[in-house]
Length: 463
Length: 93
Image 1 (cartoon, chains in turn purple, cyan):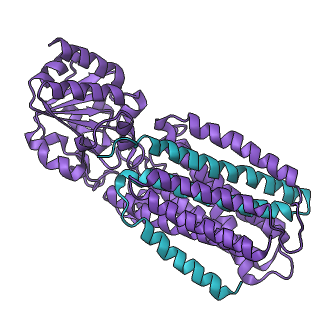
Image 2 (cartoon, one colour; image 1 turned 180 degrees about the vertical axis):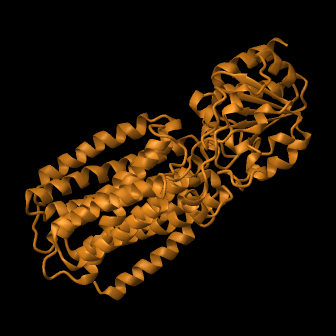
Image 3 (tube, one colour; image 1 turned 60 degrees about the vertical axis):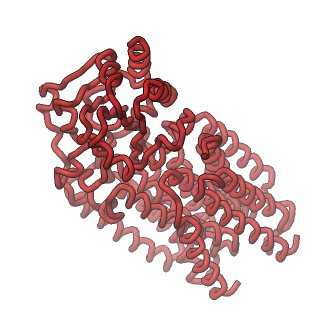
C-alpha cells in the first residue's frame, strides 16, 4: 500500500472520530456516533497490517504474536464490557482508561529504547512526556478504580505533609525527566517511570469520593495527549488527530462535570490538600431517628398530592429501577402527581440515574433536572429519597468547610415530608453526616431499596 | 512531515475537540467520556507499529503487552459505551 493511500485512510478514521464525538453529544445520535467511532478505530487498525513502514516489509514482523495479543485483548475486553453491571460501569471506564494510558507509556518506552543518535530533541521530549503522563494516567486510574470498587476508602486520603510529598514527587519527576532527555539510558527511564507511577497514586489519593468522576475524565484527557505525542514520534497523523481530539474534548468535559457539581476544577484537584478531614461524629449513632414500616410509608403516599422521587446510588446497587417505576405508576393511577428529581451527579457518574431509569422505561418528561425540581419542593407533600445521601445533604449549603460545601443539592428539606430508603445509618460516599436524617419530618425505611419498595407497592395496593 | 504541518494539525484538532462537545447535556457526560476513552484506544496502532520494528525480546515483550492493553481499551470501551446508550433507546419523545 502506498504512503498516500495509508495516510488517506488514516484521515478517514480521524474524520470518523470527529463525527463520533459529535454524535455522542446528542441523545438522538449518540449510539450511531459510538458505532462510527468503532468503525474508525477498526479501519485504522486494519490498515496498519497492509502498510510497510520505511525499513520494514510486509507481512509485519512478529505478525503471529501481534494477532495473538489482539485476540487476548479481545477475550478480556469484550466479556468485561458485556458482563459488567450498570452499577460498576464507572470503575470499568476508569480501568479501560488506565490500560490505555499504560499502553501509551509502554509504546513510548519501546520507542525510547529504539531512539538512536539520529533522534531529534523534540522526539526525545515527546517520548519522555508520554512515559510520564501515561504512567500517571495508569496508576491514577487504578486508584480511582479501587475507590469506586470500594477496595479502599472512598474518603480523601490525607497524610501528614502530603502536599509537600506530592510537590517533591512532581519536582523529581520533572528533574529526572530532564535527565532522561539529556542522557539517553535505560536505568534513568525506569526510575522516571517508577516516579511517575508514584505521582499518579499520590495525585488521586486525596480526591474525595464524589469528585472521582471528574478525575477519571481528567485522566482520560491526559491519555489522549499521550496518544497525540506518540503520534508525533511514530509519524502517524491519525494518532495525532485522535489523541488531540480526546485531549481537548476531555478537558472541556472535565470542566463541565466540575461545573455540574458546582466547584472549580482547581478546588477539586487541590482542595483536599488544604481541607481538613471532617470528624466523623461518634455520637451520631445514639441520636434518635424516626423509622417507619412500609405500611406507614404507603399511608403517607396515599394521601399525598405531589411526590418527588430522588434516586441515588442505592437504587443502582439494589437494581430497583423497575420497582420504583412500578411504584410511580401506581401512584399516578391514584391521581398523585409524581416526578423524579435527578441530581446531575447522583450515583457514581454524571447521568448515571438517567441511564438507569431509562433502562426501566421511565418516561423522559417525569425526569426533572435539579433547576426544574428545586422550586417545586415547597409544594411537594412527600420526597422519597432512595439510596441517595450527599446530593440532598443540606450541609452543602450550611456548613462551610465540609467537603461537599458549595455543591448544588436537591432541596428535599423544603418538602412537607421526607422518606429515606437506606440500607443503614452509614454516611454517603463523601463520608459526611446528614442532618436531614434526624429531622422530625423525616421517616427512615431501612433495608435493601428493592425489597423495601416492593413492600411499599403491595401495601399501597392494599389501601 | 514538517514540524509546522504537525503543529497546525495539532492546534486545529484542539479547536475541533472543543467545538464538538461544547453543547453536550449532563445526561450524556458519562457515555461521551466513555466513547472518548475508547477512541484513545487507537494507541493500538502505535503498539502494532513498535511491535513490528522491535529488535530485542524486551522490546517485543513490552510492545506485545501494549497491544493487549490497547485492545482492551479500544474494544472494551466501544462495547461498554454501546451498552450504556442501548438503555436510552425507545425513550425519545
